[in-house]
Image (tube, rainbow, N blue to C red):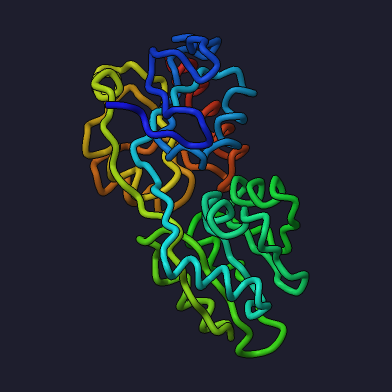
Length: 275
């Protein structure tokens, strides 16, 4: 299968050359590679944090995000440029690319941008725009951190996956916003390298990092060797992993890249100490 492209770089699978033409090392000072199954374009800060911790990373996406630029997206852009939106809430980095990357349509100064997660915020700032509200990415934490409107009925535009949890729109409505949701992309499963599946089942990884319930469900459906450390970002992801029969060895104390990297280190160190 030809790897799908994102930003000009093909999605790479393990033991194949990277975008720069180099080969990822198979081991690190902390042992076996760490599997990150997040979609391409959504795990930049996590990958950087793990590599900064001197861990070898295998970024093998289990899901691909396909951008949508249909009539609903065009109407959402028109509302933004017409100053009809007080709050734009982006739930993934791809939302920023789809809605804000058009150089011919500038965002009015009166529109506040809220970004859920570090990578979504980075995508906004890379476009030269400011993030007004830095929000956590896991749904439960996000719902608790939503901003209130300056006046009741102010318009909020929520951008995200076609499979976005409706609880987010309901919570914004309950907070006093007039909410519209636009799907900027659709998640699609990808063909996995058989080596990734074998390494999950035969202890070819030191740990697997799960950042959302969907990924926990997909990874758990394949079977994970009992000696692979399973690390979760948040309680909802932990519950999804356990529902698939996985033993979660660590949950991030903070639901961000630094928290996940620390949880991976702690789990690996605990296993090494136990012999």
